[in-house]
Image (cartoon, helix red, strand yellow):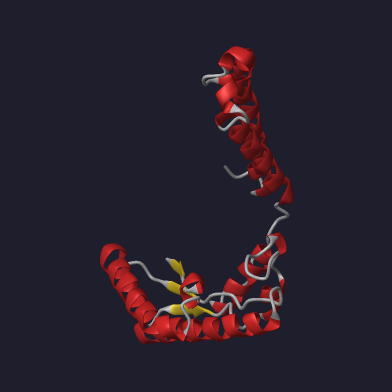
Length: 193
């Protein structure tokens, strides 16, 4: 069970650290009791240079405090710990200095493998599969959350309500995209189902 926790809590600064430690302890105790799962604690990312340098330095000082608290709790409990805070390459792989971009998430997998002492696996190029999933998700979204829903199904349907008949037309598009996704998945797995 991966526990990635602490970024938002770090905004409380040094004053919130003791509360965070208590909440982390309670969370881990509850998860241990309810799941019995092995756990991997994951530190927050260091913030990149996006805001005013003084604010970034303050945020990173707080993130370091909270990351160290997580590392100490992992060591105390014998849990694995993944240190994302110290990886500068990962810090640079964000779109806004906090949230990882696509390349950042791909690199994150290698960081986790390295930190856990795992042998890196050869990954197939998943971009084609990812694009199929994105297209399917867009069809699904358009069907279930159409723009101007009030015109299609609500009190203004008398104006454009005839367009509501298009909503079920998304279903075969979604089903076709699911078949493409499954075929691509099978191909990536070397024909294994």
